[in-house]
Image 1 (cartoon, rainbow, N blue to C red):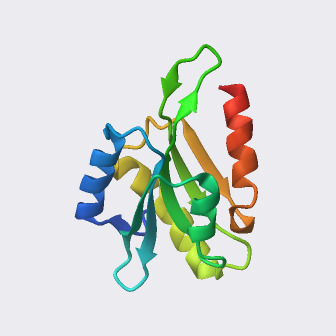
Image 2 (image 1 turned 90 degrees about the vertical axis):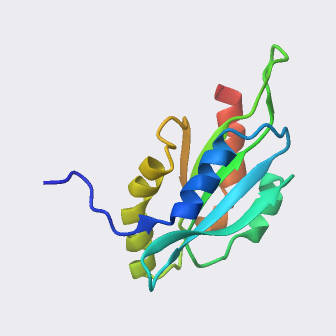
Length: 144
């Protein structure tokens, strides 16, 4: 018996886009926003963002619908080194329909595996319209 239930598959073109995103050479903050097509039960691309701050990304998210986000940002270490961590974020705000929450939660692992995001060290799950995401990211930066 499988250890995880697969609710939705991942669109093939999205898999390719995520692969390219993982190996991008640009040095700006960027994000890929994904949603589930409920009728097709498929994780699809909703929007791509270049040069976007965490605050602007928060403002782009729907208030009452879950989303998956892959975010790459510039991080300057205390010793001056620069890195570009990749974060996988599962946003599930309060007030979402239970069916949506279940579909997203049941599809998260499939997305992570099929997009080969298993080596991404920063995996956040947030609610409350991502208000706390900036605080989580600041906390992450302080412990990196």
